[in-house]
Length: 224
Image 1 (cartoon, helix red, strand yellow):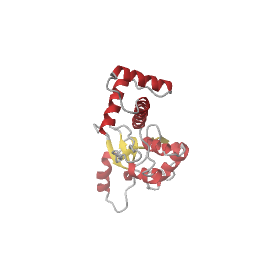
Image 2 (image 1 turned 45 degrees about the vertical axis):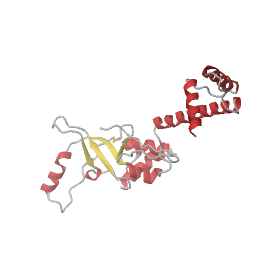
Image 3 (image 1 turned 60 degrees about the vertical axis):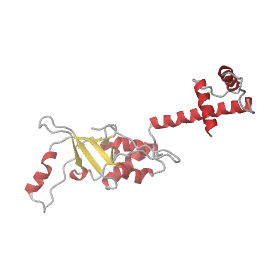
Image 4 (image 1 turned 180 degrees about the vertical axis):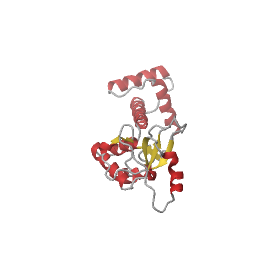
């Protein structure tokens, strides 16, 4: 079974990343809670939405080694959800029901042979995970402006912000120390040392690779 994935969204002019069609129930709960709901309320509302068919679900059936059957996705419509699905009926960590769900009953207008043929591969299969349609979860509980970026994306944005602050500090130092431009006889070593002292005196961030950061700042200044 594929691991849970969360859609990546960013603010401003940045683009939305790929949003998977299906996500595990655990992943959906994570997104709804991160968007501002209490966990207990999010669990209750997700259960209600599944029972009311506001959210489309599919089930991942575990492999059956005895019958040599592989793991299989199955439509949620093939199974009978409890009429009253409660948060306690779900193993949220593993995204699966605690008790087995039975197959839907045969309609009185469906021939027995057709029904048997349709559900034969589902008989005695264990539900490995509940998956929900990601777009339904977003539409009902989250909305396009409040979706949550994974930690990796948040860390990336934080690093970019920190990098920008260091560059601004260097630009400030250069403008303050040499308002008429860098002297022609100033060596790179002396320039870097004076900028370092300026940043330390004002308790500004000093880049780990100060020389390279200064070079990038100067290059951008010349090209602008």
